[in-house]
Length: 226
Image (tube, rainbow, N blue to C red; front, side, top):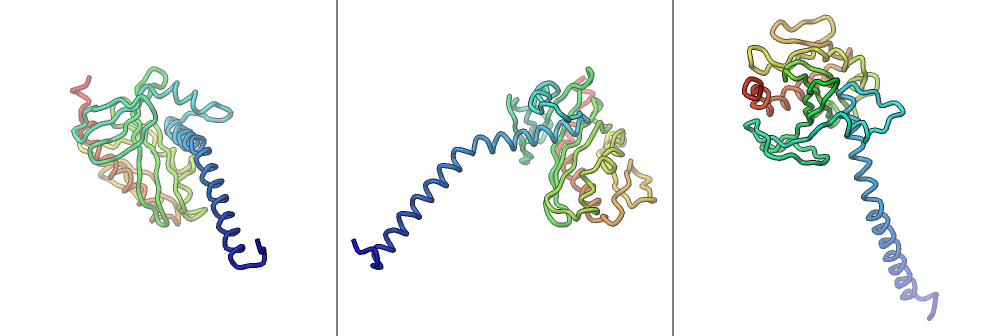
């Protein structure tokens, strides 16, 4: 075959493209289980963080299995319709994820959160005490908020003040306000927002209320279940 001909060049290039494509596809397929596991481990760490669990030098999966007693799916009426028996996370209209933990003999309920920040998605988890009203812990993260400003939602300084705050008032969901430092909210519990990060701070407030709103039927069933 004439290696200087156009046909040889085309055939050679085509064969190389096919070989490279096959290698990439095979590599992607081979790594998919590892990638999936890493995503699950990251979510486990986020959930544990909302429970104020110290993850330093700890096995996240082992800790998760120690603290999380079950993860269930609720419908919009607040009824448990399935126990997944595995790691699951959804907030479809009629399929709400809920994680049930036990910390020092006390039940905690962890609700996943998703919202929109200034520059992209924000997300997290809020852990409620057994009363389904007071906050035990939170975890917030983001995809692209401004470093030193909105990105501060990931810090303990922003998250810790949520602990002990109440999301219900007279059995109605009011959630928690995020206000400018120095301001107050007389109608509900509040925490200080981030100086210079007002939009992201309000995004967290909106995310918290919007997501908790979907769980109202479950949150108001305390008397019935006990």
